[in-house]
Length: 93
Ligand code: SF4
Ligand code: SF4
Image 1 (cartoon, helix red, strand yellow):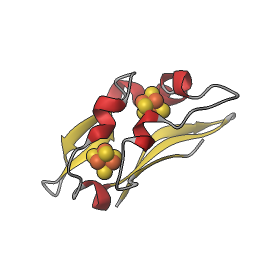
Image 2 (cartoon, helix red, strand yellow):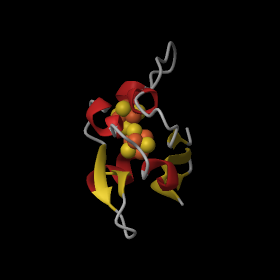
Image 3 (tube, helix red, strand yellow):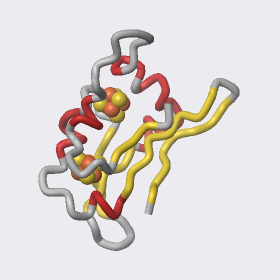
């Protein structure tokens, strides 16, 4: 399943998308510890799998929470994406 966390407004779509099928087999779950803003956490989903999710407080302001990782130019690889070896985590913007 693909879980979408975020929102859409006049400026665009701002979602972090988690492929929970890939998460369920993840060994190190490094995304959460790699995020300098505390945006990600590991939860137990409805299928009793440990998966990544966006912390509730960040879901309605995710564009701003992630802004430090997303300068307009010379953007380095996103720490959360770089830490995710299974390729389960993507951003819509
Ligand atoms: S590192 Fe990737 S696969 Fe592992 S828990 Fe985080 S998002 Fe899921
Ligand atoms: S882009 Fe940066 S702030 Fe946003 S989830 Fe990834 S590591 Fe955290």
